[in-house]
Amino acid sequence: MSNNNHNHQLSGIMKWGFKKSPWVFHCSTGSCNNCDIEILDALTPQYDLERFGILLVGSPRHADILLVTGIVTVQSFPRLIHVYEQAAKPCLVVAIGACACTGGIFDGSYHQLGPVDKVIPVDVYIPGCPPRPEAIISGVVKGLAKV
Amino acid sequence: MFANVGMDLLYFVIFPGFIFTAVVGLLSTWVDRKVSARIQWRVGPPWYQPFADVIKLMGKETIVTEGSSRMTFLTAPFIGFAAIILVSTIIWIANIYPASSFVGDLIVVIYLLYLPSIAMIVGGSASRNPFGALGASREMKLMLAYEAAFLFAVFTVVVKNGGTISLGGIIGYQEAHGAMLSQGVSCIIAFIVALLYLPGKLGIGPFDIAEAETELIAGPYTEYSGVPLAIFKLSRAMLLFTVPILVLTLFAKTVWSPWAILWYVLILVFLILVRNTNPRLRIDQALKAFWLPVLGLSVLGIILAAVGL
Image 1: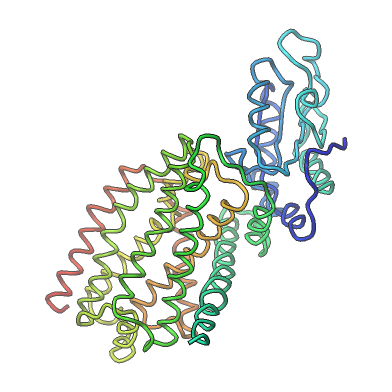
Image 2 (image 1 turned 60 degrees about the vertical axis):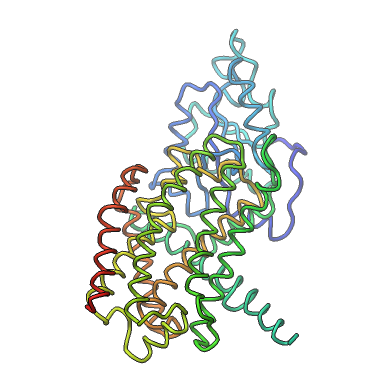
């Protein structure tokens, strides 16, 4: 986990609210769809993330956590910046999968600008190709402990 | 005089108004989410979940879209919010002290109940977002669909009790002659119409057409974040409590009795079951459903009431 200062610190009851009700927004920036399916797996009744207040929202304005999958491609770069700027702060960014964390097998190819932390500040890295749903949940929980 | 102003403020802010309605409304949305989760074989959120959602949204940044109408965008949620507090206060005060209710407060309540929907339409249109505009237009059509049927259901009650248009009068009539539901077949029809109106008004069940998260992101709420979104969520929760209470006041005697809790829970369970067993309708299907069968039913109810059944 890295430490960056793009989020202003919450205090007291607001902090409690943030930890108990993180709404996630799913943003794929050029992944092979593998990590995306694992995110959807984590949201199924089997794992039931609503127990912890986690909901999937459709608008980045409502998001508390951005789940970014895949290496940042040239085409998705302006969109990712847009989505990050649209998200209401404080907002955590979670890089999911080997490509989003380090570049993975796409490292050095012609179509990419590097892993997610080259473009926007990242709070939590979850490696794996793809990471298991348990790993994603554990990573998000560790990220919430930072708020 | 100042004592009266103080008491009115107390009514508005604490007991039947803001705090009471917000707490019970948020707990109702928790019941909704928990029961839905159990139906889907999940565990579901803890009881404080809706409170955590609202508190978290209060602490988030409020973003106003570039090029949107700033004043309209930011005031719209508060207009709906103030209206729903006022509705709740009027209904509860009429239930607790029927003598204090004024002539025509039924009409005031019905007009004020439009305001949360109008706030949604205005906010969605002001947000300069295509999803917001689409959601607003759908909400407008939905309002045209359900309001006429509900008005006829309310007229049936008014005709049945001899033309009283004050909530206190309707409650007094029911105290003297028994609950409206036991007054004949026309009232039962009107009650069924009111039950069908509830999911449309509350935007749940098969009628969550305006907010349709799988088609329209979040409809009119797409561009909202932070405090205005929290106010919208809170108004929705308070609506979930207040509108069933209005229906109970009109049809099932008073809500100032232990039976009312059972009645309210029954209505809530009915809404949750409808929500979880019916897919979302298209807007044209919703219009057809409300204008032909439901409006027909309500007109039948008012005709029966006029003949005295």
